[in-house]
Length: 296
Ligand SMILES: NC(=O)c1ccc[n+]([C@@H]2O[C@H](COP(=O)([O-])OP(=O)(O)OC[C@H]3O[C@@H](n4cnc5c(N)ncnc54)[C@H](OP(=O)(O)O)[C@@H]3O)[C@@H](O)[C@H]2O)c1
Image (cartoon, rainbow, N blue to C red; front, side, top):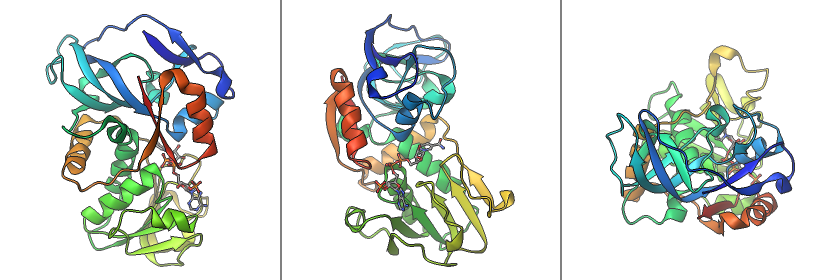
């Protein structure tokens, strides 16, 4: 089967499409034939050496997965061969990337794919959706509170904004440029801030941009970030949470239900095949913020 791998971190040209053996599902695992995935910032960070993945070379990249179950391992009974599923593999932590023809994942990391949703849309959901949901879950607030999302036009921020709205928070968006404000789903944000922070206005922030949002917080506010290296030193550890995304089939199921019900609006993307992996990464670098779907 093919797999997108690299041996040592570096520029895009370290990526190679190799022919490797098909894995066998272990205890509680499922073997999935990959249909589509996406490029996330973490893939670029791992490829370039900013993040060191677990295990030893060669490394297979990839977090997101849309595919069809081919085989189930011992004590894996939630899915049957032929089921279409979505999943996220936290590959920096597990060393198990999804950019290969067949992928083994724990069945607890998978959810049934909603019917009638295109794989290019589904591929935008797993890692950004789990990250957004885990960031919103980290808020210690009651509905009605004001929450600012930085990077609201990005993959994680866009979903976080919508989840906040659905849960009854007053969601505020911070974007960098005016055209990003126009790209936000309608009717979700109470206020959209372009390029500058509101001051001392919100009960909590969710940072997906890796910037200092402390000025926006009311005294006693809660700082949630998904970007390692933040929050800034000025924020006390007791009022801050760094979310490191965990795999969760149950959360993906909840996100898939929102998507199927039309309550989650995901961004459009540009599609490349895995044989075009270098071109896909060049395009991703060129259009930061524009999503890329990878298909088999
Ligand atoms: N902790 C974890 O386990 C975990 C999991 C998933 C993601 N992450 C991290 O979360 C971050 C976001 O991921 P993503 O997939 O959402 O990336 P993304 O789609 O590139 O979104 C990031 C957004 O932040 C915006 N931004 C950057 N600087 C800004 C600024 N100064 N003011 C306002 N907006 C700004 C970007 O705008 P531009 O397009 O203009 O740059 C973009 O819209 C990444 O750093 C990623 O590595 C962490």
